[in-house]
Image (cartoon, rainbow, N blue to C red; front, side):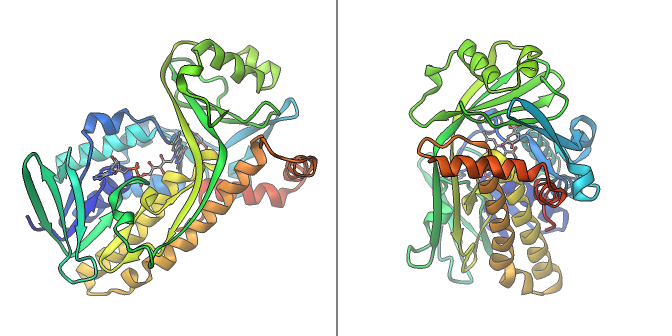
Length: 390
Ligand code: FAD
Ligand code: DHB
């Protein structure tokens, strides 16, 4: 098989790039390890920054998002027994975010790919990358007993944190920066009315909590848990009790509870691999960088990679201009590191750290007090949360 751009990974990054390039007449093949049902069964991001939403529209996939997604102009931070609102619109100079689930967005991208007869191959096994440093790179995968070869101009590694793309870059070329946090997030999805019209991020001595949503009848809640906890340790009742204890009393009292329809634990990690290019392999999204979910940056960092790659590839194929491809890694990393900084800061502000000393605790409290006493601090939070420009 032959294509122009072979994309490994059928998550949001891979599908979005495939769709955008196809609209410009550039041929792609997407290889996905899992079935479509499996990919759509993963509950992940819920908040999209303005730039991501724009990219969905450019990919001609924004119609349902614009119809069903909710525009949020702000969110609440619960601390010291009260709620303080962060007015995103006011402090970011007019921007907001869209609450629309990654599951729905991925479904929209799959449907768009189907409509255009885009090639998305599921259940591929043993994906391997070859000759990335040459002008004739290729990818192989196993389909049953058969090894299939795809020759291409470029390979895009959009295969998430555990995929093979990043791992095929030699160790003496790739520098990896990693920070592991000593806790995870236990997430519950429930068919209940969200407790609040806007998201609530809660700092509490028992640990962080987040009240989010997917729609007016579907809520998504998270609590910070030790890394040693498993989903089996948490009955629904235990989850709701703990969540309520970490929220201001009046919020807990009006919370609608119900059976969980999904329950999972995600460990928190900050990670960046650089450079994001090796020969004719380009990394994008979680394949190259991970943030703790606190600042809702993961999917949104992926969006800027896709934006830069989309423009670089279009310039290459349509205008014979390779400047975008040459600049990709440095440009993408500059924004990635800013998203890292923001996610790290928000994580440090809101979580309870098992080994923190009294000095750390007083600093954390001061950070919170400063935030709500300074329009500049709120402005910094708001501009990062709605998304820095691409
Ligand atoms: P992925 O979604 O991981 O997709 C990679 C794809 O590659 C997968 O489908 C995988 O099956 C496939 N793959 C892996 N290995 C192979 C292989 N060998 N061969 C072929 N295919 C392979 N981000 C936000 O912006 N906002 C939020 O509110 C937010 N909340 C989050 C909440 C949670 C609980 C979690 C876990 C994450 C959250 N994120 C959030 C992060 C966001 O979900 C990720 O950043 C996003 O999924 C990255 O997309 P991606 O396409 O780069 O990677
Ligand atoms: C969600 C996840 C996040 O990490 C976040 O910061 C906001 C919302 C969510 O899954 O809804």
